[in-house]
Image (cartoon, rainbow, N blue to C red; front, side):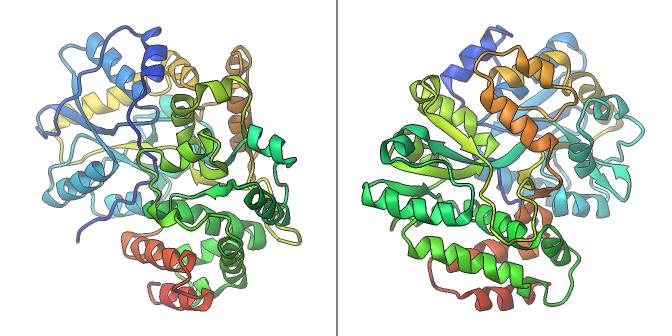
Length: 436
């Protein structure tokens, strides 16, 4: 069966600003090879964009310190990786280190014996990681995946200069957000940038709204495959609220032509053409590239998703991706597997790597990070994200990663039809119930 890897990380070209920042830490330049698999040598495929400079530095450090046990790294953009890793897994020739997001994809890899049980080998790494994040790499109480980059909650970013000009404060409730839409439209500003052409950013709205209305138990019933789970009143209400936003003009008339790849939605907020964007913490490095002056002048704001008055969900709950993960391929040679495991234990979230994440203003999910963040200048964003994750009662994995591919694909398709007005809330629920 063809595996569909639904990409959450919004890829963008590595920025010269971030490269320069990391060059202060590590002067070596990364070598980026074309994808190739040799089961007798350790290999890894990684994603370009975002915080890729940090992983690049980790591999450079490892290869420099272990010339006899190097790891050949290939860097791919989102769609290229998604296609290539699916084909490689089908043919039994994946890289030694398999990049993933845990969830249903990891469940399937474990069920098919495609990845190695790491439980007895990676304790020193997991001792450094926040337990709520590390738990996502477990299946049936055993560890098959190790987090490898920043934690990635979904954040409501806003252009503070735009809000100040029109006299608005960041919305605390959904009703506040709806009211802000009218004010911003009157000022000629796109209220909310949405990369509807990429589809997956639309998931963030149904996730947060469902959680705020009904709590995390609602989606858990979907994950558990309960009959009719998609017809839960909280999901239907979340879909109705999405239509309220669309009908009010929150996303404008051209959101289906905006793409997340290339930071199309981020650029609209960075340039002041839009006021808000709901996106993952993975896009902050792109804001650094797109609008360094805006950030330097405290013009980029960030907030939790608004509460829903009368809802059953906790307003501190978070959705997104706890992190990206490395798994080790069972198809690799024992020698290559051992090199990969040694890399995970020695290099993942080592002190130098943690510093590199902080340099590019991303937050690794490690314990007791407050002191290191406090030492940094202009670290309000880092403190916000770290506190957001550390204090969240529940951190819900992105739905298209939590669900198996045969459900994730229809989810993206049917939700997009709700956003475009071609499918009702009830029609969405009926279509998705058929996938359970």
